Length: 249
Ligand SMILES: Nc1ncnc2c1ncn2[C@@H]1O[C@H](COP(=O)(O)OP(=O)(O)OP(=O)(O)O)[C@@H](O)[C@H]1O
Image (cartoon, rainbow, N blue to C red; front, side, top):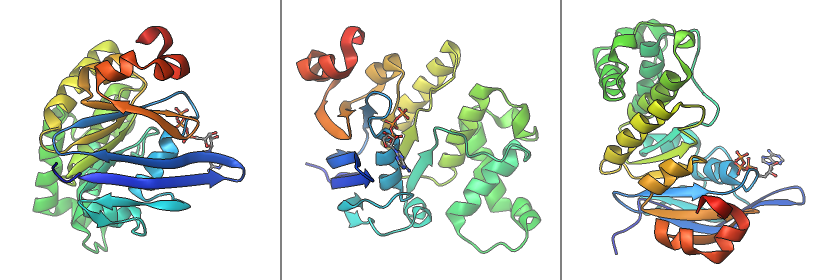
């Protein structure tokens, strides 16, 4: 079997008496979309935090391209090719769309820029940023203030910022949240094509998107993966239907 791009091996995390992640082992393979679903509070965001390096697991390890990154900072993981989009927007609202994208590209380059204006006038960074904006369809909005964008466009910008890293793997936390049907449809098409370039670990509540995109689904309940399988396998799984899917299956 091909080596996973991203892997967690038995990671656990508690907040006081609450066991938010319980011995979670899962992987992301080249070319796939692996969706993580589960009810509110199941531990999806906690899991992502440990994968991306903003939370340290109490036990277990995280591997990126076979390399143990458990003790690496989020920034180092990002530079090693792990892109991320956030549930709550991380964009600088007063900056322009292009500035946000340049900021993303800057993180990837990791060069010590002393002045922000120098970064903005750097041709390479601008080109990377403009290319990412064009890919998500925001090329005509580059000079607008981010605060002026619609909710859906901000979601697109989140994806563009992640793309400036030229990621080898993407972790996305509810990218469809708050998007209208049109926006969800467009983003679904985009992610569908993106998986060949960078496989995606997709945390998503929008079941239409999950069922149409996922190669595999893992179901998280009370911090534990209760099932991993294809869409058909998960839909047919009695424990999953009882714990989570109910009528949606
Ligand atoms: N920093 C923290 N301190 C204490 N408890 C926390 C912390 N972060 C998360 N929790 C708790 O851990 C559990 C899992 O939370 P988490 O946000 O990971 O769930 P989730 O599946 O992402 O939920 P949602 O779908 O609502 O985003 C919840 O009970 C939450 O209250």
